[in-house]
Image (cartoon, rainbow, N blue to C red; front, top):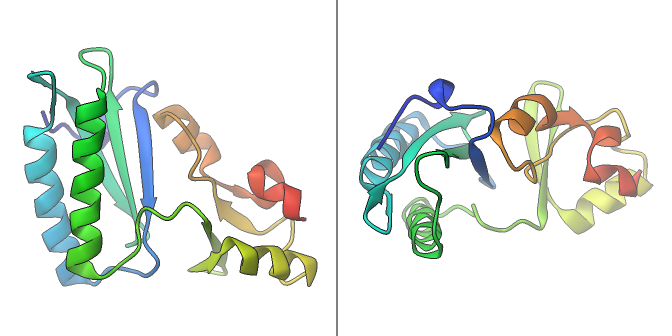
Length: 160
């Protein structure tokens, strides 16, 4: 059951998929349509899942699920991963690789492999004040308050 992302409670479970590049306007239109279709039909053990999404900075796909009605099951999580894999294939992007870091350079979002980000931190090309995207947040409340933070406030701080 697709609902507006904004209507989901702060306890809603979150999954964040970061793309290795920005999506074009045409791609975003198609992806929004595909997400609408997928989430409308997404179920767990035959029960509709109350879910929503948003796309930020033309590159982050954020899925949210209100588990108070029905929780995600292994099969429903598998279905969402297969859906994301289909987007990866269709648009020739990386969405599932968690060993990459996205951070802000001014108004732009940069994307680097973790090893490169570590080297940049050592070379002081990024600092503890660099805005990073903490894709390890677990629920909508954390997403709203601790997703886009300085490196010093996230797991990235270990490299500074």
